[in-house]
Image 1 (cartoon, rainbow, N blue to C red):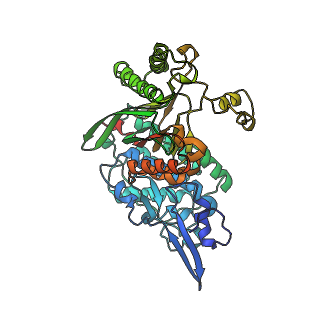
Image 2 (cartoon, one colour):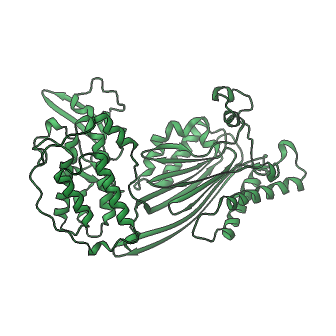
Length: 502
């Protein structure tokens, strides 16, 4: 099994797969092995023969023009990745263009230019006009009406008015803006006639070398169109761990999904409130605080979150202050002092369609995982070590302190004047896995070290989210286990926004 980009000893015909393995996870098929014996070249590749042909969905009358435009943009992104390794013919064979279960574009295999002479679209030197020819072929084969601005783009590609990837990407963005405009007429009334595609295109001069093209591709935005929800799934679980005799963690999930289906469209509206708390204060202390915090915040938003938009920063902070006051009052009532005062961390995520906001106090975390961006820790722990780093202290020095992991903020021990919850808004532009985690799961960089095996597969709709979370809890028990372990997983799938055609 080949598991790294070290191409030492790998046959030359397999090296392109290795070099591109980390560029576009869905676009490039995985290579499992490769060798040459008796002048026969053998590759063991990920089997994508069951993936749907791009042509089949392109010609489906229910496929929206915005989705087609998105596939064009994905092909432009792939072009920039494939050019430096001379694998552009891979995009010019219709049977090689496939869609995974989430309708993301991928290649069934790679074709290197020097060995692609048998492909129908490679009789002449491969250039950006050839990509336009593929799109025109797809349009003609689909026998469906296409909007005039797309036809104009294909004509400009043919006559050489569009010569670079940057120009082509810019044109696609212009068309996307046009389609998403409220003033845009219904696409079904726009008709265009296609002339037969030429059998070949003359070569065009590139105005940048492969490295510059690749740089532009990496710097370009990965999302061409505004996105809408395709699906939202969530699950949560808490575990006592291997060393504790009681569980001071608590979590709450509230999700409201509204689906509207019409013959030519499907829209999904979603509102979610996800809360995770890690209590402290011992038996009948920490577990009381964590449960009280979750239920207080849930009730607060049931009353205050009535608009179709996310709550304001001030509204969200008031929810945190209220939960803090409830726990603080109990501490005062019971005359608790010092380490005997109950308290809890809190991390909560509010989601309204593709917009989200996270608020947190303490060291319970929110992580965000996407295929392109990898794993990102969204929240910053409220602890002494991080406080020192924010003052300019080197991390190695900050975490050498014996109190480095001591919390600087928590709900309950002190009144709200000493409480400063962090609040951050963000947009969901691509398929995303969101993870709320207590420190029993996140300690010792467990997630950073294992996300590729235990989180990345969960981005796929075909992978059971509950089983994935169970595996994650088992992993934490194996390598941590010293604390309670709690996690909430939310899988958000998106697709190009089609509401402008309703």
